[in-house]
Image: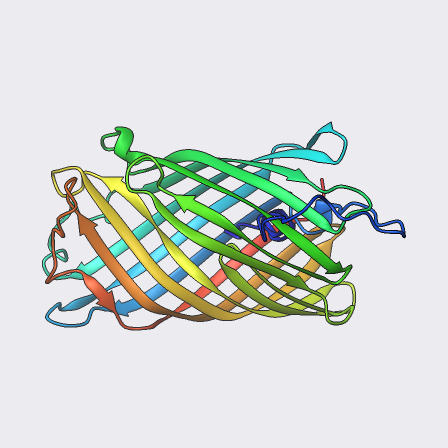
Amino acid sequence: MRFALAATLSALTLPAISEPEVLPEELPGIDVSEFIDVLSARVVHTSGMEFNGLTRGEADFTTAGVFALLGRSEFAPDWQWIPAFRYQFSSLDLDAYPFGANPAAPGLDQGLHQITLHNFVLHTPENSRWLHGAYFAAGANSDFGTFDTRHIALSAAFGSGYRFSDCFTIGLGLYGSNLLNDPFVVPAPVFFWLPTEDWLISYYGPRFVARREFGDDVRIGFEAGWNGGWWGTDAFRADSRLEVSSIRAGIYYRHRIAGEAWVEIGAGYTFANEIKLYSPGGRDRFPTALGETDAAPYVSLGFSLHRW
């Protein structure tokens, strides 16, 4: 993702402990459009993830996704509703025992799909350093060989943040995923810092970014964050849950090609890679064939549009 949501998720931070502070000076509300790409597309390919332990072989993992804002509505003073749509296609090519000779293995003849509708509600009051927000997403993660409620993905978050200055915002919230089937709730720390006019350092999503601008048309940065997903699949003749998880870290180069349109290339390594397949009851289907893999290189190519 580029879940390109820096300011949006910056609203999901530190719970307010009092009424919004009214400042003696004018403090305009935050314009979140400064930090959100209205359209982005990205392809990421990770190759040669060699399995550890008794497993022989390796896996390649490729994702291709698009994220688009569907609009922005100010339904009350200082309140905004921002809906967005995300679709991601993933392919997992397993060349490992016992999957190498299995034509039904995921990624060999079936696509893995994630379709999500995001909803953000933001409150950024004028003359206040507090900002507040809530998030809800509903979608489907499936190969669509079969489909039931176990393939439905629900997630939500809420929280508040505090602007110490125009250049530094910090906070905390709660984020919950897979709320319908196997809820997982974690704290969601966020910070957004502009140490100079050329540098941006932030954490959101969860994704850490340190980026520098070189003029108006070039940005070079380092990013690190979680990578992967889960899908319902019947590729193994039974309804299963496939999970891919890793930490991705690398550098990227972003260049303005025209107006508000940018192209991006990146490269790095994925760490803590793990591929698991579970039965509907939560049993690990192939504990000796799937599991942890070694670190592996990735490359990425992306396009984004900052404003319509």
